[in-house]
Amino acid sequence: MNWIALRMLTGDAVKYIGMVFGVAFATLLIGQQSSIFVGLVDRASTTIRDIRDADIWVMDPRVKSVDGSQPLPSTDLSRVRGVAGVSWAAPLLSATTTVNTDDGNTETVRMLGVDDASLIGLPQRVVQGSREALRAPGAILMDRAGYAFLFKGEPWREGRTLEINDSRAVIVGLVEAGAQFSSQVTIFTRYSAAQDFAPGGRNRMSFVLVRAAQGQDPAEVSQRISAQTGLKALTAPSFAQATSDFIIGNTGIPISFGVVVALGVVVGIVVVALTFSLFIRDNIRQFGALKAIGVTNLRLIGMVLLQGALVGVVGYAIGLGLAAGVIQGGAANAPALRGFFMPWQVAAFAAAVVAVIITIAGGLALRRVLTTDPAAVFRG
Image (tube, rainbow, N blue to C red):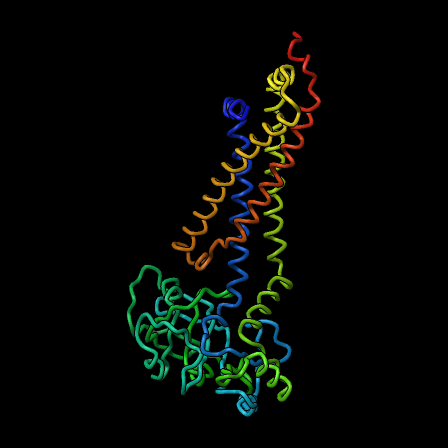
């Protein structure tokens, strides 16, 4: 009977392909849009993950995310250093500014000013130049992908200059840094140089980066810092999660992507259910003949479920493959999609949605099969 069910399904190639297309289209939308959503939210905490030396971030109590810093007075650095359990503390300046290239291009960049003495705050991997080169006057390091974005098609050349707020900056190296949520380009410089590149008020320090002493629990140290200084202190994972939660709860990103995913589900249900119903209608005489020769309703249900399962598996495989190809190809070739990926949770979510689509479509089709009069097959 299973062979007969599959022959009935594949024998009507147009409807079979239509159903597979409906499932594949829904899976493609769900997989691609969900992956981009996850990638965007993941980007929001890239800065926190790139700075691996610090396991605690200290900030103004009003700060909700790493992109929404509030300036701190320099005296807070000494206060944090005086808390028991702190191995070291270093300042970090985070600012958004505009750079001009020699050929007239203007781009908004994310600038991070790291501690002058220790250079704590730089990404771990330097792909061109060296960390020590940053100690030269006006020196900056740039993320490798940002350099390719700013100087499209041009090879690496040490000593290129940028104009930052009427100041001259020299690119002395490239680092491997993650893609940012709010900017395509990230530059790194010393804390003192960052104050000159992005002048502002009296208080310029955005965060205090802290390392807990050996044997100390970072969570306990962060609570101690908050209690003694009145500042907000979070472990790096907690701050990354808080940043992601802020993006999800305070932007239109979840709604925008949720609407597209919902449309994919609705389209999938409508296309598959309608096509499946037409398939059952066109084959109702065959189902009636099977009932007439004694095939039970339970067996017929199994046949319809098998047909739906085949459509679901084939459509899901095609749609997920296309979605993964779009994400992987975009991440490799499009700077805007750099760092995007498809986590297994997205694939599992898409599979669950496909199962719902097939269940609804199959349930609607089964009603007609189960109510078919066996005698209908013998009527003219």
